[in-house]
Image (cartoon, rainbow, N blue to C red; front, side, top):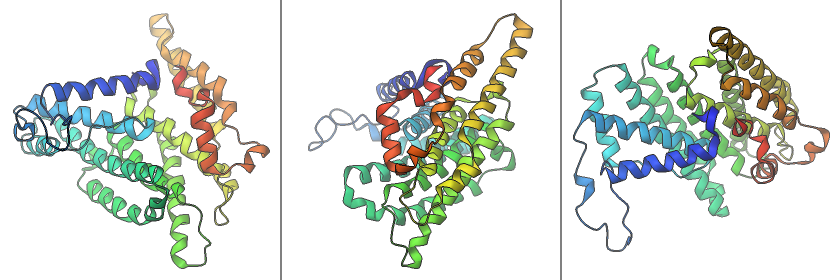
Length: 327
């Protein structure tokens, strides 16, 4: 769906899904007047009654979280009903799909928590001083969630996408804090976190190129786009004396990756066309990627940009740099 409709469509569908689960009373409807509480029955006590309702709620929460994390749209908040749905499906799982839903929901919760830290830091500049200390506990939560997964689940495309999304969202918080003086040993945690962020983005790209693009999930597509954007930030982070942005560009060549991605899409489209006689959406995808790939090349004049400034310019100035948005 993401490849064919773009991020604005996904944002609208995510909002529609959030409204639907609220209207179906699967979650508590926000009060219009916080001072007096919600009107009517206390929905928080209604609970999840069926397996189908549990699945629907967890699917919407996971979708909302991954879209919120990667595209910065509002997210369905975690609630007691979501926790109840996780517990119900854990106890009464009918197939592996139920267990995948629970795993993605719990990982998605960590993504949402990290995104909330970022939101607070953007709204309150003074809070940026408290960002770095949140990274360790968030990563511990993620490692704990990962440890509960089976080997089969760890190999599932959707689980992989959610895990990478959580890692990058957590480590990307480092970019919200101004570079330290590197006079204290603790300052070097920043480099450790930035390096981990780089490695996570690199792993996303390597995993994607090894995957069967014909069966890739929407979550995986979103995290690839997100990874490219974060890599661009890291490769233009030049006002940090402890960070080597040139090494980032030597580690991952964004333009080369996009060209490889376009080639993969073209090969898959050729296979589809051989069977059906028609092009599929991957033909348009390959064309869009090749058209926009040069925009991501870091030229000498880009080296005057700090990674945060480059990201702000990316978000506000040229939407064509979101190559998936053209599909």
